[in-house]
Image (cartoon, rainbow, N blue to C red; front, top):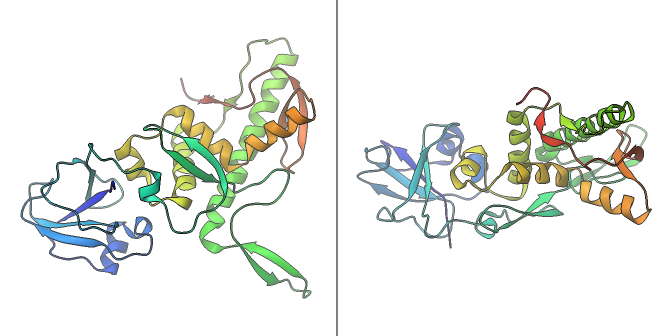
Length: 266
């Protein structure tokens, strides 16, 4: 079973408070770490080696290490036994679309914005001010829900702009993202983190995400595969989503998604 190991220099143990302070609480899955002291870590110093798997990490294991960006720690994995989606899956999985990434692993990307309406994100049943039963998104998923709306709007605008350019005679016009590569990566990682114990450092360490995978994750997040199936079933030309969840005929024969190049990237 593959694992991601973490190293904290100049420490002999680790508490739950330490996990928060070092930026590891989000990948702990609510579990206390398995840890062991070591006289020499990747920084050349002694400290504590830990993981969030069922087994205590072995200091003798050869690992590829990376200094974390989000906190003062190192993370690494055994290249002979890299962790896959099954190793990093959270106990609670949100339904969505599978995306196959580098290494052949299939990662479940949650549908934060369903087509034509709704979401697969967990909902809390509450009463509104009038006493009518309604639902609201579980707090820990509110941010990814908002990010999904941003992706939906950006993709809608990109396809609409592409349709206008083609209607004006620009036959080779492409739909371009208005969102930067940096922000698209951050949203894709947040989508992955719903079902898996990963953040940006872990995704970068494992090198599992190509640019095409990033776009597939963003499309899965807004249920775009269902949009494409709906359009095909109804024998429609290429269609693009609108902000209210209905599919609008774009009248183009272009690609069904924005390219990975934004208008500000070359």
